[in-house]
Length: 423
Image (tube, rainbow, N blue to C red; front, side):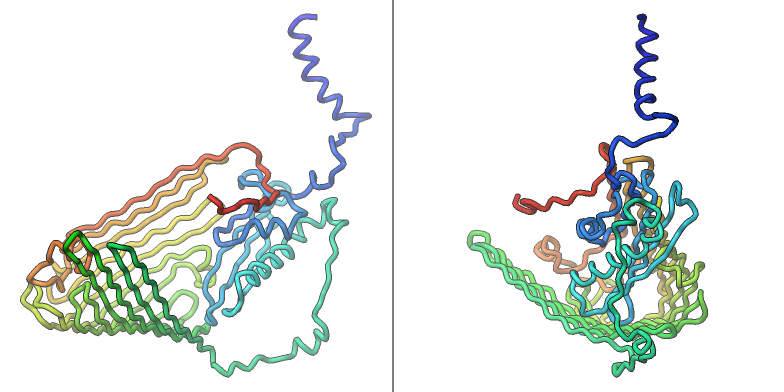
């Protein structure tokens, strides 16, 4: 038998093994082999928990191998909770069979209750795809709400009128032989979010104190500041909104003894706001007035001044199964002197290039010509090294990038938490 016949026989034997009397048979009777393949696309989900609670699908690590691509996005609700929008995108034999389900958490739910909630909704959404697989015969659906007809008529009366309040207090103390650090932060907020209005009131205070002992020298670093800010927005249709931002602040780092400002604004989103969790293209313009009372005389011989300023922001954000992109361009300018301006650009991309290969790039750049509050006396070497005071700079730049390639088994159904975090 020559080499050609051997090769032909090697190719023919597997086909014979798979074909008996014209019928294709599987190599195993395990119904899990015929389960749908799911790719979970959620950076904020507990994927291990989902695998445990939904064991009747095969989880794959590459979206090109899946039957259903589950894309989960989230955004804050007016009550302080989270809305998880879960898009189920059919692939291969489910092409064109897309579904969308939503889970909304309340602000007092623990992380365990939240993951139970979105996992239950994911399981319900998958029923459409699982129903025609062998594993469907092992599933049961139950309903645990009694007197549903009566409950469905209940009307919730909100005694707080959609207002949500938060009080925060944080502290951190570290002590070593030659170093000590004390950090205090506190905050208070009140928000009201309805389809027509968005009101966000915030107050914050911080104090950082660090002590360094170098032989016979003791260096003390101290920064503190406080801010009271307000954002009020009125919705106008599906694409427009108007509002204002205002704030009162004091900050030792930026030479600010006291300042206040108010900036009316108008915003247009090219896409309907209802689609903001998946895509946004925003154009926002603000113009307003600010008053500054400085701690020390500035480079421009000012101890106080009132200034008019305007700002333009263009921002794009898209999250799709092929990856995520975002970008923003913001420019601001003082109206009394147009040379006092700044321009900043930020962008990022997470892209699945091909099977197993992904690319991440993020960057920010800024041209700065509006540091009007810099003190005339400058900064000491200690203030520069310890970042106690803002320093003059005409630009700022930051870049991060990463490339990842993954190969091997496409399945990742198993969860094994043993000895995690013991390094």
